[in-house]
Length: 96
Image (cartoon, rainbow, N blue to C red; front, side, top):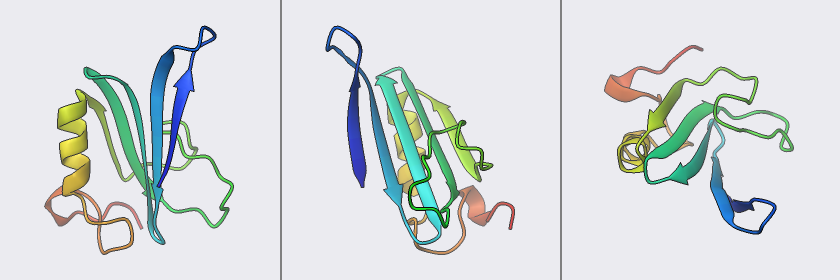
């Protein structure tokens, strides 16, 4: 898992970006505050240098949430691991 603390021009923490890459799925999370978190799961690209940012990656997300950190992260941790089986809630695997 890669993590990055992104700071503003004054050196203050602005957001935390975390990316977890598996053979099938890539999860990306951007945490702005306790009240604002965006997470997405996309199919892992064949390009290892491709940047994945929730909502901005150019690849359609099979799962995406935007909301309070505790709620978004709880849902993300309920998904199957990035290298295992179908994705989504209720067993929905998303688009092929």
